[in-house]
Image (cartoon, rainbow, N blue to C red; front, side):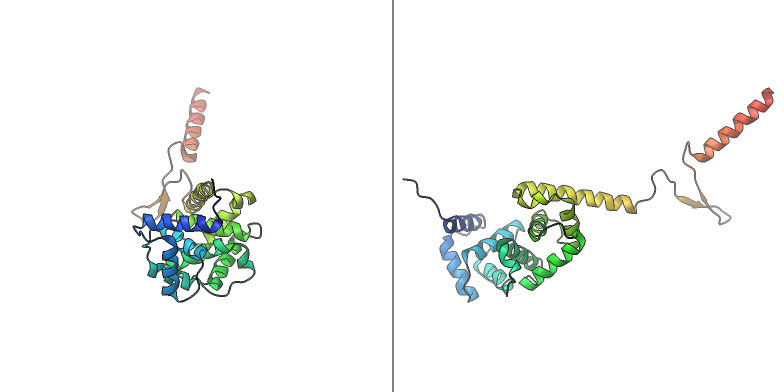
Length: 229
């Protein structure tokens, strides 16, 4: 007879999957208990799942001690705003901590606040959080300006699409931003670099077929017409 799995069972299965990939054979429930004992605080399986998921996505070593330290560092007083998308806020805190920054709830809010400054009012908290998580999983630096600009370029509905689809969209928009930035700072297409003559006068070499050649050819045609007359 088929027995429907609870959300808690699914969380433990996901934890077990990451533990197995890390070479840890301890049962997921025992691992959670060991993390709680090491941290000395009450830690939910959801917090452990968030920690091991982000550690796996950034190729960090997973152990009881490292997970306990990561969860402890991201703990703190959460605002009402952070209870709505708790999993995403926790994931952001874990990613900030893994890169050596403050991952506390206060630091999480500050990060999203800076990203919103670049994004404007249209993208939601969920959009900014998911873009930041996707960027980190892609190996893109967690830069608040980049996160905000990418979120601004995406449609509002992107906050609800699948994880893989969002990652593809974030990767594409990040590349487009880099190209536009490079194009904006590059020299004008077709221009030749300036050179300095022996007299110290700065001159510019004309490209083939440029305005100078057209002027010279025009002068030659006029001279030929005068001779014919």
